[in-house]
Amino acid sequence: MPASGKKKQGKVCRECHRVVEGENCVVCGTTNLSDDWSGYLVIIDPEHSDVAKKMNIKLAGRYALKVR
Image (tube, rainbow, N blue to C red):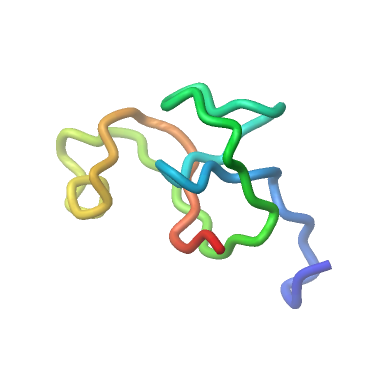
């Protein structure tokens, strides 16, 4: 369990950093997923989010800041 005491939300796509359920990324379709990630980010309005623009995120959703 992570130091914060909370369980991680699931696997993360190594390509687009999206937190996914299942074995495929719904955004880019890859199966290249990782359990080793940190930093949880929720993007609600990617068109007006400076963070989303910096990370090249075009769709609202849950993302990881760092994926290993």
